[in-house]
Image 1 (cartoon, helix red, strand yellow):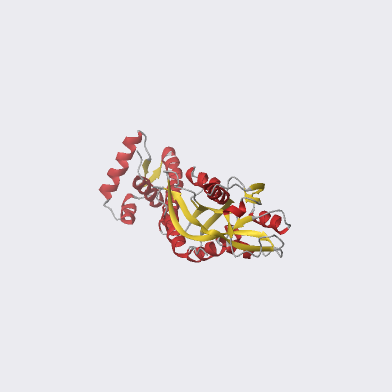
Image 2 (cartoon, helix red, strand yellow):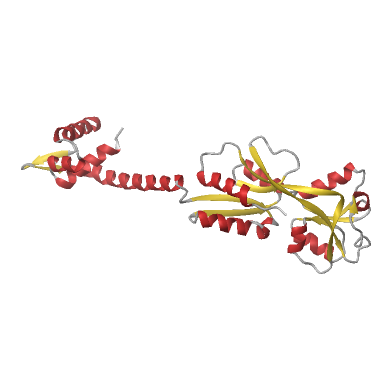
Length: 296
C-alpha cells in the first residue's frame, strides 16, 4: 500500500530534480531517501525516476504518480483540517426536532444563542408531533428532539427531563364554565372537545386521564396545529387544551384558560439516540439545552 510519506518523498525529488536537495528539504539523509524510492519502485514494479547528466527526472509513470500524489496529499490535508474543525467544534450540522408550537416559542432563541458560541454550526429544524419526532430520532432522521413523552421512550433512545408545565383547559368567554375557578374531568366529559392530532402526545394524555376518571368527552375535531385548536375555541366550537405559555402566545380575543382539577402537568423531554457516533457538536447541544431550555 502506498503511503503518504512515499508520495511526499517523490514530489520533493520531482521539485528539486536532485536527491540531495530533496533530502535536505525533507530533513532526512540522502541514502535513506534513495532507499525509500527504490523500495517504492520495487513495490510498484515500475521505474519512477531516471538520471540524465547528473539530474533526476520523472519517467512517464513517475509523472503520472506525482500528479495523482499531489491531488491526494492536498485532499488529505483538507480532510485533516476538516476533521480538526469537527473535533474543535468549529463546524458541523445538527438536525433538531421540536413540537410545532415550540418552533416559534422556544427554539429560535435557544438556537440563536447556541450559534453565538458555535457560529459555524448548520441547523435544520423539523416541527411535528411527539410521536413522529420520537420515530425520527430512533430512525436517525433527527439527531435530537424536544418532545412530550407518555411513558418510556424506546430502548434505542435516551431521554432527559427538561421540566414540566401545567396543562390548561381553553374555553370560549361565552362558555357556561368560563367563570369556574377550575375544570374537572367530569365536567369535560359532558363537553365537545377539540384536540391535537394523533401524532401529538398531549391529546392522548388528556383522553387517558379522562378515561381513568370514568368519563369520556365528545371529540368533535382533531387538528395538527394548536393555533387551529385555539381558533376553533375562539369561534365557540368547544374546549381544547394547552399550556399557559401557548395560550398567551396566541391572544385570541374570545379565549380564556382554566386550570384542570386535579391540576395536570406535561413533561418536556430532550431525546436522542443512545450511543450515537462520536459527534462533539451534538454533545455540546445536549449540555446547552439542559442548561438553557426553560419550561414555564
